[in-house]
Image 1 (cartoon, one colour):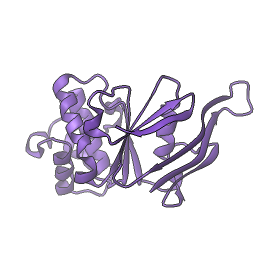
Image 2 (spheres, helix red, strand yellow):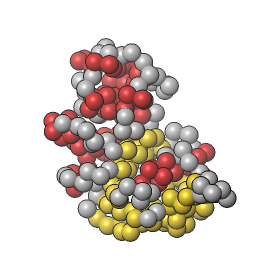
Image 3 (cartoon, one colour):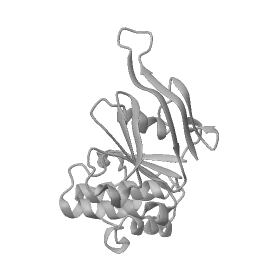
Image 4 (cartoon, helix red, strand yellow):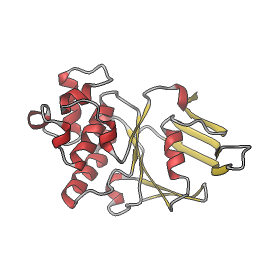
Length: 214
């Protein structure tokens, strides 16, 4: 489905501030894959996430989905950021999930159920009244109604308390089956990785150090 071929990225090329973030990345991600991307700070994780989400065109190589550039396939891949509040634009949960997508209340309710939110309880809740973990799940439901083929999640477990973390891991574990979307989780948190990932990609100095089963 997704192919990265000799992908590299240099920020501010040709200037004194030029900085190489990635180089020579070869990567394939299938339709039902559950991938965890790990690596130290500065290893290139964020740059890889942005390229996979089609938000950044690599300066070297190609990044495609079914042969088409990721940057030209709007909605095929979506990204959920760590600070979910920045992705919530409407006052209530139901309104926000439907925002920017052709989705009626039934579709929004179904997305809420996939991320473990009871529609009857949460449909009319104000987003500012939600916990951090609930806001992340609402943001994720808002992506699901767009029916993406893959979702990239940037540090989705950071800062969550134990119950919220468990709930979010449960959601991630079943995402390919329940929503038909592959997942790429970028995280420092590798505890319980075997529950939500089948494969671990480790980055180091902008290159893939290892690509292995969990």
